[in-house]
Image 1 (cartoon, rainbow, N blue to C red):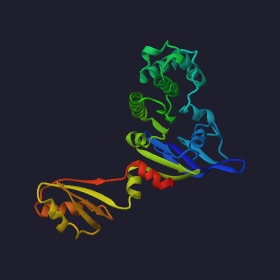
Image 2 (cartoon, helix red, strand yellow):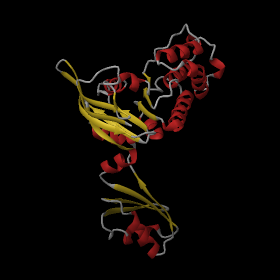
Image 3 (cartoon, one colour):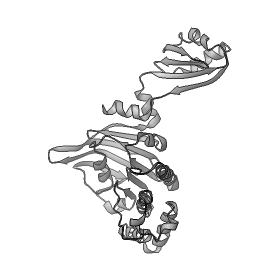
Image 4 (cartoon, helix red, strand yellow):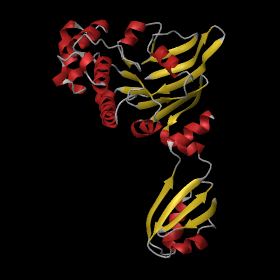
Length: 303
């Protein structure tokens, strides 16, 4: 759906983005993560066609963003961190303005605007001046403007920054809803790693202008994990686990607790552990693999 191939962006002698490559499949919610100054905004501006790369290629559904910018821009919805909203316009007037700029066909414009209003739950605010709205509602207006042209790719830069907890939940739910519709791909930049872990399927991490990882969240966490922590819950004799499990390949230690144990291993040995527990008749209740959270993984990659 989206392919970034060996893209570099220089400002004079400064290389903001260095030979980056990654791809995003259709219908996925992708987090684009990195410290301040890592190259996130520069990359997003190149993907949206607002800024040309110094070298490299960006393809959207097989079309080069800079060889055919009009075709690509019609497929993209972009919400910058500070949306260019006009406080003197009503919500409806603003969406009419955006629809005209994005080239939405006249015969389809009214329906497209109405659909954007409904998706973002702004029905009761269509005649309200944008300047009179709360920050959370303004963010909804920005998202409505980003989706009014039915984009295949929706790019959101810090969509929940500055919102209160309830507004954050509402915007996150809206993002998930928009991704489900029409197989839309959503790419979002965020500093809130828990947010990325909650709603995204894939994560792309950029640091010092270079891609450090582009992977599903689960694969990324598993790949960087130095040790596996396996939680076991049994019906009886949890202390027996200390005697029966260390012989399994990769098991380094067994730390018993009230209901079972935490096993530290150099590999995922859950299958052998379950087999051993069942053989000894200890009554296996549960077996789970504890992984690092996304924040721990992120810090490993950018430090």
